[in-house]
Image (spheres, rainbow, N blue to C red):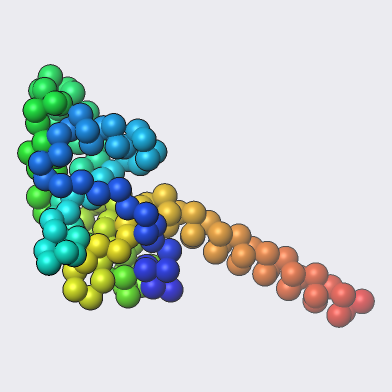
Length: 149
């Protein structure tokens, strides 16, 4: 299954110059733990960074910096990993594990942001798949039991 089929396409985005205070407000308003930092290129939104609720706490609150002055560009992860929407789920999981990230922007063939996938999304998908496999085992045992009696 391509990751583009399960990613969340309603991504909350910000620009590099967005203040940390505004970023925190957006996270609260949209109930998200991360914002994708984008750069507009020819009218297309290309991801250039990611800022998480943890970044806000560790980089700004814990060091008592002014959230009204510090921008997401000052604290965002500089080495942003993305995954093409055509990548498989397990390929995305392997990439997340290799990069030690919980969230991953999903891009189209031109590097334009189309969604985001989070560890929580993948755990939900895998739990559903495992549940289906478990149900298959039960049904197979019932079928065999009926056929043999």
